[in-house]
Amino acid sequence: MSRSLTLTRSVLAGTLAEATPNQLDFIERWFTAELDSRERSKRLRLLKQAGFPADKTLDGYDWTNLKMPADWGRAQLENLDFVAGCEDLVLYGPVGTGKSHLAIAIGRLACERGVPVRFFTATGLLMRLRRAQQENRLDRELASIGKARLLIIDEFGYLPIDEEGSRLLFQIISDSYETRSIIYTTNIEFSGWGRVLGDKNMAAALIDRTVHHGRLIRFEGRSYRSEHALMTK
Image (cartoon, rainbow, N blue to C red; front, side, top):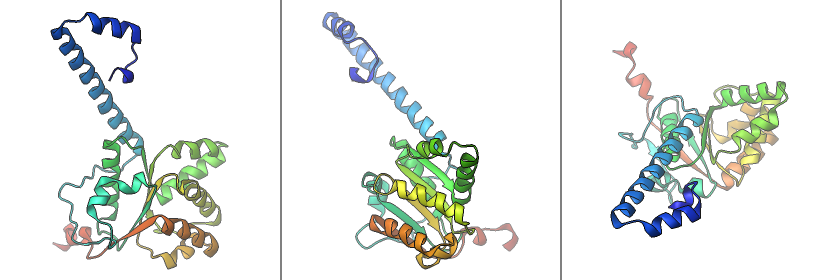
């Protein structure tokens, strides 16, 4: 426990050697409270740095519309095994079926467990990279994003990406290969990724990296937003 605190070892050792049982109990409770406080601060810092657009959790989440891989399921997802293995997830399905909700909830869960996470929409990520490139700080921006162990790219394919944007996005994904995990949410099947990126060869390389250490989770059913929209009532 003392290794996590910035105290002089000789002073600490001397204090512990001379302490009474009651004093030792107090010191232990003090250290425990300090470490707990630091852990809480770390979790809050990670949640803030992640950039989640909403406070989504797994509490009450409807799992009925999901189709998991045959050898992999909810337990592995919630255990964050895929993050430990630098594996990717593609959450694929129609709009409004809970893909972004699940991605955010898993990202927040990772932060709660001390895992650095960054969340972006695909469009937001590209805008951020373009701005960094224009300001001659692209390397710093890539390094900052690269500190995350889990990267979430939401709404991939909702808007087409031009050639320069495709290169920037590919650089992020290529740098992440076997070094961190990526969660994509998309309503575009793999065969349409070339159309989104405007480059079939680049799309093939991206898909190859994603499939190699990745899993596909399919979402089905009607849009939750449509079913609960005020205009339909």
